[in-house]
Structure formats: C-alpha cells, structure tokens
Length: 307
Image 1 (cartoon, rainbow, N blue to C red):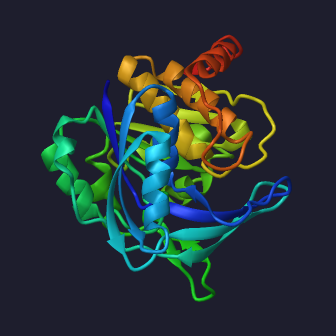
Image 2 (tube, helix red, strand yellow):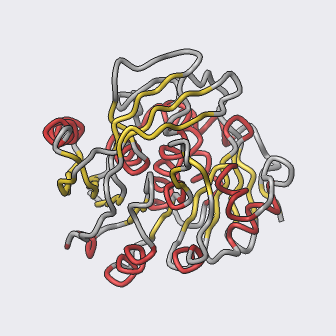
Image 3 (cartoon, one colour):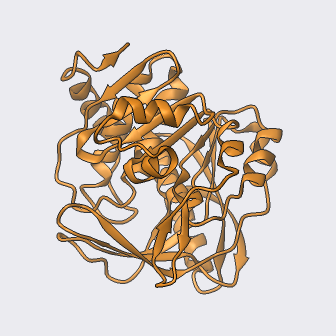
C-alpha cells in the first residue's frame, strides 16, 4: 500500500451555508481533507501539522478513527475558520485560531509515493517545500491556498502572492489552484479564459497546473497539451474541501497512470462531487462510487482534449 504524506495544519471549522450549519467546529483543513479522501480510496496516509492543547486529544482520536497516521506537534492554538457561504457559493473566512508553521519533516518522507503540501494559513513556508524537495524524489503536489492568505485588519482573510512563490513552484510536480488563487497568482480570470490562466499558472514553474472552477469544471496543462475537465453535476450542500478532495482523486489516478491526465482530472471531479454533497469529515467516498461517476464523466465530453 502506497504512503502519501500531507503537510498542513489541521483545523476545526464552523461552516455556514444556505443549506447547512455545523453543530460547533468540525475537523477540516486542506491536507486533512485530502488524507480523508485518499484513505477511502485505499491509500495509506499520514498528516503532518500542529495542533493546540484544546483540540490535541480530539485530533489524535479523530485521525485514529479515520485511519490516518498523525504527526502532530503541539502548539498554543488550533487553527480554524468560520466559513460563511452566500447563495452564489462565495465565502468569507473569519479566523477562529491560528497554529504556527510546521518545522519537522518525518523520516517517512523518504519512502512516500507522493507528498501533498496543503497549508491553510502560512504554515508551510517556501523553506519547508525546499526541504521536502531535498529529501524525496516523490511528486510534490501543492495547493497554494494557505500561501496566499493573510489576516487583514478586520480579522478576515485577504489574498496576496509573495515574491518567493516561484521558488516553491519549481519544486512542484503539480500546482492546483481555484479561481481566486489563480487570479492572485497570474492576474488572469480563469472564468473568462481558462486556457490562458492555466498556462500562466504552469509557467510559474511547476510541471502540471490545474485550475478548478467549481460547477464549470477544471483545466489541466502539462506544457504540451491542455485538457478541459467537466464537473460532475450535483447539489453542493457544502463546497468546503472541494478542491482538497479533487486533488486527492487526481493523485489517486495519477499514481496509477501519469500519462492519462484527462482521466486523472475526471477522477478528481468525481471524488470532489461526493464530498460536497455532505458536510464534515464523514462524506461517504468509496472507490466504487468514484469509478462510477468517473465513467460518466469520461463518456460525456469527447472534445475535452485541446491542442
């Protein structure tokens, strides 16, 4: 069984959408959600992050319950957000807690089949990504959301890109960004021109770029060709973690066949579609259902491969 190790602080979030409201704070986080999905797809996963004393025991119990190995370092606070979505799916994020940067790289990174870097708020600095690249030859997949966030004067999250982002990008096999992150990184609106935006994202230095656009699907660029991936149509009761689980599904397929990026994108879309139908870490992702939805996506868009 392949080991996939993910770096990024776990969070306990409060989530409010037009459809649901969580009963208190629930386990979440970019790397956490990816591990949850990958475990249900049959992979051995490990999560590296920092957790405060207030949630430490709960976090360790949660990860044991979900079959994820925890490499948790105690900190003063546990990260978390209050996420409020409007009818369009746009959201505001209020910070409920902030854990410090990750400083330890477990020895198991040497044997990992893949490494995910999925920060939620500046806890995986470029120096950590450079350190990872020095100790593993496995593909490194970056979700840049947490590298682009900072806390504004009103306590809410704002987005900006730092001058050293290109240093991180050149160590990454894959960078997956949503439309807001793509705009921050490239200055291009992927809704207006997805092809140009995903190309600009790849040109930052990674080998493969992915831009996700919710119900509008996603784009993939590997420098030789582009693919437009359809979305699996469903009711998005809670979009939190959609991109995280898309990346998990993509990686699951990528490790099976690195040449078929269109199928990998469809597996990512299928995986995310199950996740957004539910709230919290218990979404019933299964390999059989992911494969069923992937088959439907593969049959619905014959013109998705673009030169």
